[in-house]
Length: 119
Image: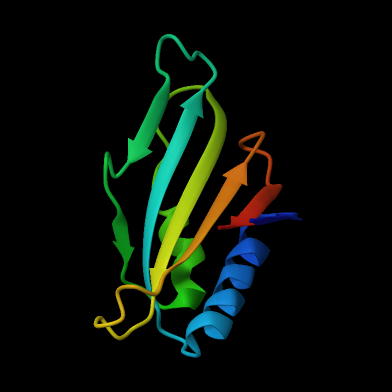
């Protein structure tokens, strides 16, 4: 497990894209995400997930990931931190045993600095 800090989401997404090209030797991986916001008022509204209990397939090219993620509205609550999990597979659907996992965490949302962790 390796964690790297980035000044914003865009360079972290670029790094994931680079890692996937190195892993799968292709430019069109299948990518699923799970988003999680943690509330400042933990007892009232502890956490909000999207999609709840599942994964969302990103059906856009890698250079459009930023716009795709920006299009997902955060919940209406005081947010303490925010995390995006990425589960990535090669384009070939027969290779389901090969996966790369990443997590991007905003420790002080809405500040732009993020931490990227590869599992």
